[in-house]
Length: 553
Image (cartoon, rainbow, N blue to C red; front, side, top):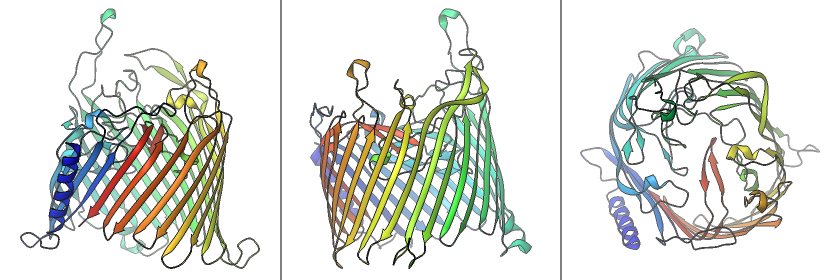
């Protein structure tokens, strides 16, 4: 049955692609298709369970029609069954997204499903990340007005997607932004850049009985919860200062144990850039800013807002082994980032110059004292710093050794508090070294070699319940071979050689032809966390085959 569905999906892709360029009623039809399949068998050494359904499949097809200022689209999705690590709520198939839109210079209007963001997203961000299994799109109306150059006004209303249904909460919002430099003609073309904005979002959700029955009380839940934010950005030459402040009203929910303390978040970034050099300093503070369209839903679903992580988003395997997810209930942190290019033909830059990237971030929890439970403010915030949640410092050097060979070296030091993932243990201290060599052999072939090492003071302790497969010391090797512009082969292995557990090898082969890409792989996946932009989902252990197909037309 699974193979039949996969065959039908491929056949539909070919059929739709065959009409590319024909257009409908003078318009243009484009789209894309993506299918990801997975097979896994039991492996007691890494904790992988046998899949009863043998094969799991996530698939989607997006179709977009445009004709002048008008456009419309729809998306078909299939989760039969969802890939490991995706919530079972995604199980099913059907039409998941549809919309019609009109876009002109002064007005844009969308009816149906839409994505939107106010400012940095502190009070509203409707977005999708298919790899995290997140889609909080709104079904309703979204209006944008641009009455004069530099002025943008947005108004929207709708209900969020919750797997294959809608949230019970109604979301309404309005946002305004003025690009002063663009709106005031004498300022155009100068060094000064200035933008200000503000937004307000309201969630309406009907009351329900929540409280301790044995205590004989009923919580008086607010039907309307509002959140407001103001933001500004000022720039002069290479300098830029950006900041945003948001505040949310009383919003008791399962996330904050039904307490009534108001929430707030603030972020500020000072940056400077010129040719060959850039630097930034960012600060952030968050308190009780879980803002959802349903108060009883735990986890990552149905967030109205988005709070990006203040830490660097690393890409190398061991640098992402202990990722940090934004703590919406309370955190404060700093991040500094410096990048510069050392000039060529110098003793440090060599013949081709050298790229240097230095980054450091630290995040702490809030220092709080509990003053009550459900129905109260819950806690008070003290003046001191809370516990360290995460910290890292890294330096990355990139230098061409010849016209064909480039070397990248990374050293990073990380401190990770397992309490952020619900584990009780001492802080982990990790030293990580990465060497990455890219070699362009000739016009048709290139090779990449990657080696990583991580030394950690984390230890397995079965009696104490410390059995996380990431614990201990690790070594990794990877070889990637690109053959022309069509084929690539990759072989990698991650080995826990001291106190950890697991030998995670992977072999993958990919083929690209035009806008179509096929990839197949076999190997082991370590249990851990996948994080993108400070939002995470757990990835279970697996041992087996993976397959992916993407194409566009």
